[in-house]
Length: 130
Image (cartoon, rainbow, N blue to C red; front, top):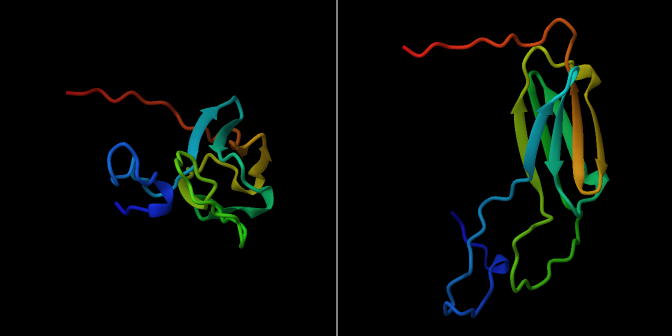
């Protein structure tokens, strides 16, 4: 794990040891199922809609964000949240209609709608443990 000096408080009650060490930035994602789609919520407040990028390559969906050039980087005293870039990838199964995936960004949440092809829904199967 790499330590990024700009992300930790300096000269705190623990001497010069940082309050925390930030791991690689990731946007939190929740996914839920509706009757005809999967809805993916990417929690990414403070971002600019035009800097998100969604790609489908085969059965892989990639959601990424690249901050604009010249974005201000203050000298943080405490930083528990980042508006930096990220990249997340998800494997889609054959029940997803990749041609009709849509997305919208509002109130800090990127909502990606993954429609299910009628008749191709996954069948739930219980596995018996022996």
